Image 1: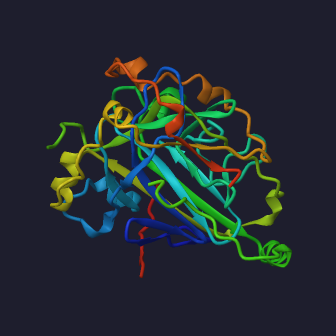
Image 2 (image 1 turned 90 degrees about the vertical axis):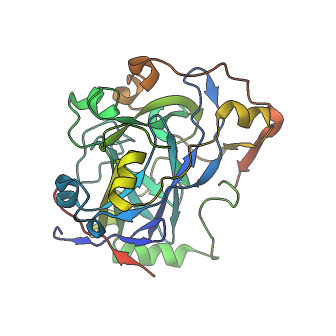
Length: 325
């Protein structure tokens, strides 16, 4: 545990980082060509504390602490957020910032912004790679050069997902509470909701493009209190490794994207006409997709029927061990 850092906690399959709750959502992997609406949530990834499996997890995982989740090769995910009060959330993928494209640092930066401002940002589906769109988070094994980490840093040392939440100072929090005229509830909207042979360590690469804004923060950095911070390392393991470590069967593979579209099931569009969007990260905009590096495995894709796109907007815990990252 580091100075000025409060323990992250686990509540079921939700991470608690100070005032922030983070859930990892299973979803459809969209095609790498074209621009797509937001795919649905298909349930949550199970989360387990690394320290609860000292005899079966890799030693470096124990040293880093944190939690783990099972994910298949080229499976996609998105992160859902809920916050009781304003806070900054840093997201690293292989210790590369998913917002700015710069290497991970445990210091909030304003230019380029290296964090999400919550509760404004309800979720994040991928890296900030374009004006008004992101490229989907897609899991790939380390060692193949397909992760964002490999392309930005030239190595694949970390993998996984890194989260750090920073709350407001006492004065800033008091001002925010005084400014509120009514209680408002934030968070994901209701309903947005065999083993492979991959090595245990997985990272995130870039997938298809979808419409999604990453909001700029209108608060000064001085409003955030680094003494009110929590962090956690999220390890991504293959389905086979998950079973070897936990003795549990991994979740079933996600439904095929083509079958979902043919069934006419809903997709989503989240757009806030009153909000601006952070500019794309130049480094993340230049990242090659997973398919571009490893070869495509997309099947011909039936276009999403606009009638199935739903507009969502103008709208008991256990501490987790933190280690050396």
